[in-house]
Image 1 (cartoon, one colour):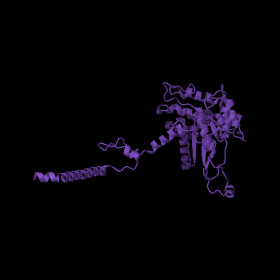
Image 2 (cartoon, rainbow, N blue to C red):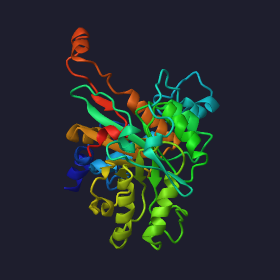
Image 3 (cartoon, one colour):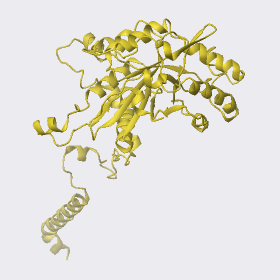
Image 4 (cartoon, helix red, strand yellow):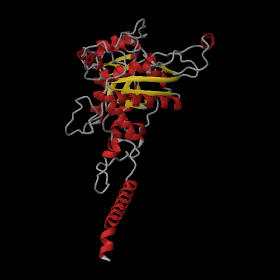
Amino acid sequence: MLKTLKQQQGIILAALAALAAIVAVGYFSAVKRSEPKYRNKVEEMMFEEGNKSPKYVITLPDKKSPQELKEERRSREAATPDKHSVDDGLTPQQRVLNNMPLLVKLKPIENVNPLKNVEVDASLTEQEGNYQLPKTDGLRKPWSEYGRKVRVQPNFFRVAVVFKNFGIDKIASPAIIHGLPPEVSFSFSPYAPDAAEQIKEARSAGHETYMDLLLPSKDYLSVDTGPLSMDITSSPEELIRRVKESLSVGAPLGGMIVAGGAAGVDSMGHLEKVLQEIGRRGLLLVNASGEETIDLIKVAGLARGTADIVIDGSFRPSDIRDKLEEAERFARNNGQVVIVAEPKPVVLLEVRRWLDSFSPQLSYDEMRAQNVTMPERPFAPVPLSNTVIE
C-alpha cells in the first residue's frame, strides 16, 4: 500500500495543485463579480477596497422653492457685473466705475416743454399771515390747473412715477430733473433748500410738482422726522400750521404725497382735520405711506389717490427690477399704476432704463403703416394728475 502511494505521489500532488488552482480561480471570479462595475476612474476611486463602502457621498440638491431660486439669482446678479455694462475693452478701474450708479449716466432729455404754470397763479394763491398758500376759487383747483394732461393711445396702460423726498440734495437735483422724462413727477421734502427755485426748474422741464406730508417715524424713539411732521402729540391746530408752512414755498404745488410713517387709529381725528385743510385748498392727496388709516379717513371734495408700488426699502438693482415687473402686472390688471420711489441713484437709473423700454405710442394709421399689430410693451408714462378722477 505504501509502495503504491509512493508510486502515485506525483499524481496526487498534481491533482491537489490542480484542485487548489480551480478553487482559487473560482474564488477570485466570484469576488470580481461581486464588485460594482465602474463607468470611469472617478467611480472606482470612490470605493474602499476592504468593505466596498463609498469613500465620498454625493447627494443631489433638494428641490428648491421659487423664493429660494429667486434669492440665488439675486446673489449671482450681485456677484457678477450687469450684462449691460460688461465691456472687455475696459480696464478693471473703468469697469468698476461703469457699474456704479452715477447720475452722470442720466442723459438729458431734449426738446421738452415747460408746464403752463412755472410761477404761481395769482388767482389760485392767497396770503395768510406770513404764508403764501394755494387755494381754489371753486371751479379751478391747483391739482388740475398746475398739472398737465397727456393723451394716451388705446390699449396702452398708464404709468405714473413720483419721486418723493426730493430736493434735499440740491447739487444732484438738476441732473435728475433734466435726466428724466417730463411725465415723471416730483414730490419735494419740506426741508429741501431753496425749494421754490428747484420747483420752478422742475416745472420748466415739464414735471408736475408736489410736497411731502411727513408722518412721524414708526421708530420715533430713535428717528426724528423733524419739526414739520404730523407729530402725534401735537394739536390739530399745530399740525395744520405745519402743513401751511410746508406749502408756503412761493412756487406751484399740486398737492401732497403722504410719505411713510405711523398713522394709528388714535391719530385719525387729528389727521382728518389735516386732510380737510388739504381738500379745502383744492390739492391732491396721494397715500404712499402703506397705512390704511389714511384711506379710512373720508373727506368730501378731496382729490386723492394711492401709491400702488412703493420703492423705498431695498435698493439692490434686482429688487428694483422685481418691483417694476410687479408694476407692469398691476398696470395690465388695473389699467394704470402709480409708483412712488426714493430718488436714490440706482433707482433713478433703473426707472429711466425701464421707461425707455416702453413701446412708442403709435396711432392706428401709424401702426398699419409700420405693420404693427400689437405693441410689445404697451405702457405709457403719464404725470401723476392723469391717474386721478375726483
